[in-house]
Length: 201
Image 1 (cartoon, rainbow, N blue to C red):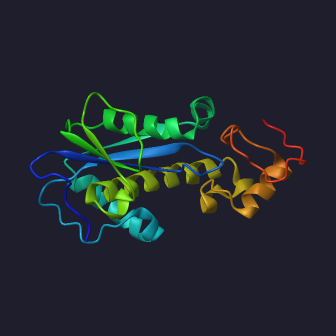
Image 2: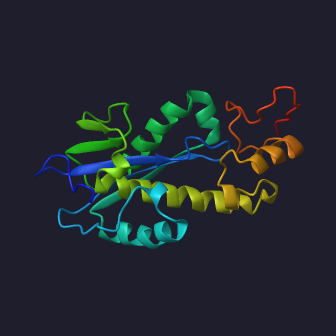
């Protein structure tokens, strides 16, 4: 079972992101503060849950959380500042939206840029260790998937409704065929073969 907190008697916000490895779409982060009595036996790292489970748990987390926020960084911003810094920025934007100021932050991963002098702990594989980080991973993943499904209606050729912008073989084949859209990350290696002529829109 995941841990309720890292240090007792302090308000901790768990933070995680989704979409770092995608070729298209934004990187999305969430920050979640759970109540001390939160019953989260069903919560797990979002990658260990099915899409159906994530969509079922999302409204429960949003209803029960003391506070939560979601932050988005666009593909254009990712290209400007790189994906690592974009992930940190998305977390900062998620934290900006919290209605409760946390005493400390639990960050999934091993690096982070400080946020408003609030103490933080980086937790490797934190989404499989702490409830608040796991809850954040679920919200980040659900919100990002929702965005990609919306974009799919305007760009159906890339099958984002199914692959969510990740580098599947089909996604790359479609990039080679149709070129890259405004939602593709131009700083990423969109095609494995450098000899292919890739036209950016």
